[in-house]
Length: 275
Ligand code: ATP
Image (cartoon, rainbow, N blue to C red):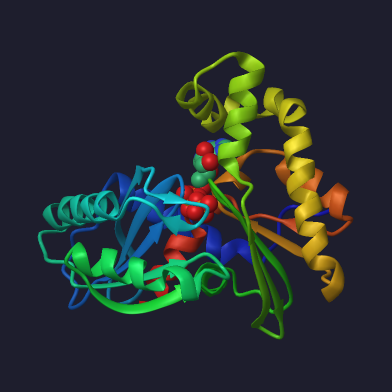
């Protein structure tokens, strides 16, 4: 079983560059800026690229405005996107005009209007609305296999054949469930469990506690990939930051499972690349 793929080199470099500009924006003037907005169950992420599609700034905030892939707090979502936009505009000394956003697989007909209105309500001109796996694949550039996006509230599965998404699904199990398991096992509040889970130093200790929920996610993946004779799995999404999750998924699915160095920012960057 391999967990590192040379195909991730470009992706890893892009994510590293993005992490740097989250800490310190690149304020060299660009003719145009492209903003990718990822409205997630756990985080709202804004990724800003310059005219050469290089990351220049980024910001993210823990938020409770989306549930199971659907916006449940419309006003809250607009407020947070607006605040993050302003924060980045002040840092870059320019107005951010163009933005793209994405939706979990399978929710397009239900929620595309709401997402569009959030982006516009925050003061952006929306250039594109796409599905999350397509966004992730703009960074990963996978031709065949399954992209599995384990986020906060949901696990999105997209199957690719010859570079095209041929099947998508979104299931309501994600990192929030992992935190609930930790909260129960360690008698912590949900917020404390979240903090504990996100600390990489705790991952080795947490794996046995989280194994049943990771196996549940693996069985969900299995159910979707079986019919399509998928040969490889590519993991993205914040929950895949958990060290060792890839080994359990590979074992349960019996498929080589790869993940980039930091799976959390792949989708937001892919959204911005599509702007
Ligand atoms: P969704 O895709 O379900 O709408 P989202 O877009 O907010 O949610 P992501 O930002 O991809 O999802 O991931 C958020 C999840 O990743 C949260 O549950 C968070 O606790 C988890 N997470 C973030 N960083 C880490 C880390 N270092 N270790 C483990 N889990 C992490």
